[in-house]
Amino acid sequence: MSDVTRILNAIERGDAKATDELLPLVYEELRLLAAQKLSREPPGQTLQATALVHEAYLRLVEAECRSWNSRNHFFMAAAEAMRRILVENARRKSSLKGGGGRARRAEMEMGDLPSDAPIGPEDLLALDEALERRAAEDETLAGLIKLHCFAGLSLPQVADLLGVSGRTAERYWSFARAWLHRQIRGQ
Image (cartoon, rainbow, N blue to C red; front, top):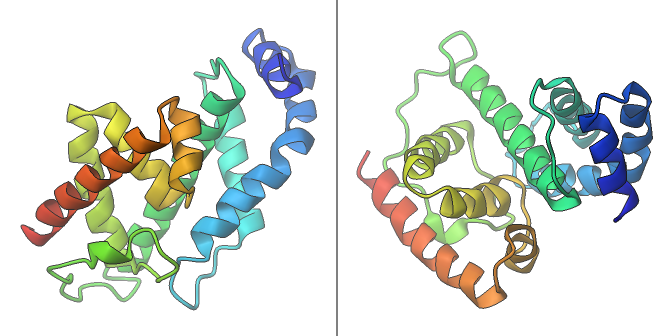
C-alpha cells in the first residue's frame, strides 16, 4: 500500500491530521495536472496553477464524501474538481456581466482536442454540456474525456487511471471525439 493510499484510508476513518500529511505527497502531481490544463487556456487567464491546485484540494478534503479507495481514485477526483473549477470560471467569464452574450461558435475544432491550442470559455462550456449528457449514459467514457480534455492527461496516463489497456483508451478516445463533434456541431 502506498503512502498516499494509507493516508487516504486514514482520512476516510476521520483522522484530521492525515489531511495535513496528504498535500505534500500529492502536491507536485496536482500542480502538474493543473499546469497541463491551464496551458490550454486562452491568453489572459487569471487563474494560476497554484490557485487551481489549492482550490481543488480544498474541495476534495472538505467534501463530505471522501472515500477514495486508491491513489488513482484520488487523482481522478482531483481532475474532476479541477474540471468543475475551470467550468465555473468559464461560466463566470461568459456571463453578461463578464462580457458574455457573444454568439457561441457552432463548431468546436475537435481535431484540436486535447492539444496545446487554447479553448475559450464558450467552447469549454459546450464541451462540458456534452460531457454531462455522456456521463448519464457511460461513466467510463465520460471519465476518459474528463481526464484527457480537462485534466490534460495523455491517453496512456488515462488508461492507467481507468484501469484499461492503452489500445482500449485509444478506441474510447476515437469514439469520444466523433461523439463530441456530433454533439457540439449539432448545438
